[in-house]
Length: 47
Image (cartoon, rainbow, N blue to C red; front, side, top):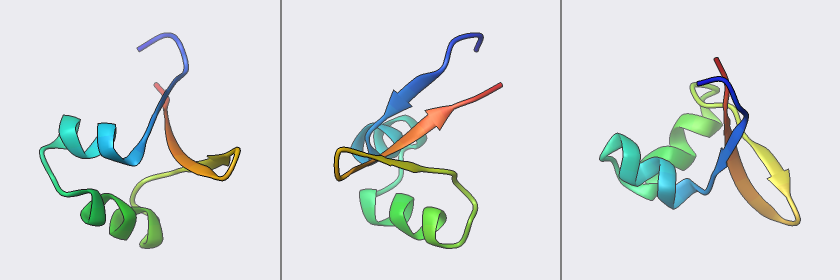
């Protein structure tokens, strides 16, 4: 992936076929990186 893309927690859950709560747990454990943009969590796709 060459461009930076942002995904909502629900989009990440759909892509990974996991629940949204699991996405939040992975963020909490440091296994997924996230940023907050306008009070919404988003995951940025990086190379």
